[in-house]
Length: 333
Image 1: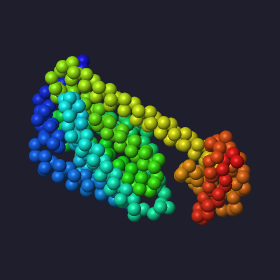
Image 2: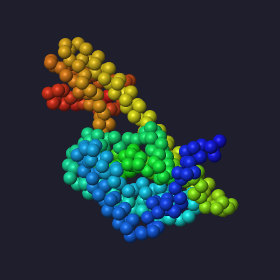
Image 3: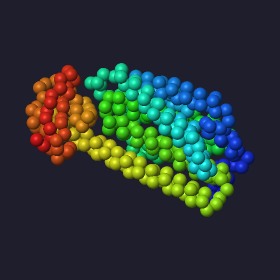
Image 4: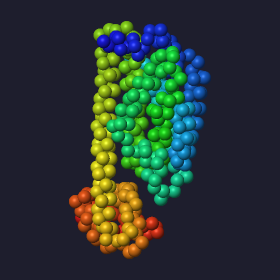
């Protein structure tokens, strides 16, 4: 059964040779000077482009950075080296490349005012709270990328894989958030990057093993391969637990904002023409934006209605369409 699936996914006449894979994925193989100069120059450019796209909230610019980012090459090189049970320099290129991109992101953060709310930028907010769906998407994308490299006839999908896997933008966000001393946000973006990296390595190991690109099997080499799979699987579980916690947190926040919206609507029920526009959370504070042609009811009643609906101690700010901000206080106090 497994052999049938492998032959269907990786037809023998479309499989690339080991030499071709090494030529593409090993930056220390062949013309190393040309490969490494291309890698570092494109990585710097992609990081600068990603930083510009993130800070200006330009999705098109961020996508451009994803397409030209070369970081997936040494990551897939790690997978190929693992199944061949041989030491490569791929891990070093990935580590140094990550450090370079984070540094560029940190330098770019110098143009951002200290009072700037990072979560108001969708390019940052969308990369600081990853969930389990992000891991599932990364895993599917990793398999797509590994298959595209392993087959001769589907290389055209690689730009799409580069966009979907998103390696450089999360690292830039790590640097931007770290440069603003927003360590929790930086950690969230780092978890997103690590989940994408593990997905690529795991998918690459599975595909290249199925491709038959492994070294001759001996007791020692099989033990090494099992150890490599176990290490990646353990890291996967650890990241999965973190993402599961993040997903649960996102669900709870969504539940609490819905409850807060209902409580605010009840608070405004006796004011003709008044309505709730939106309820959002920023920096652990609940912002309730309302529209009212008349004076608002006492905010003490709103806090009383929110008690039991959201966690105690959450600060509440009522924002009117006229731009007025009313510090209502903390729920349950």
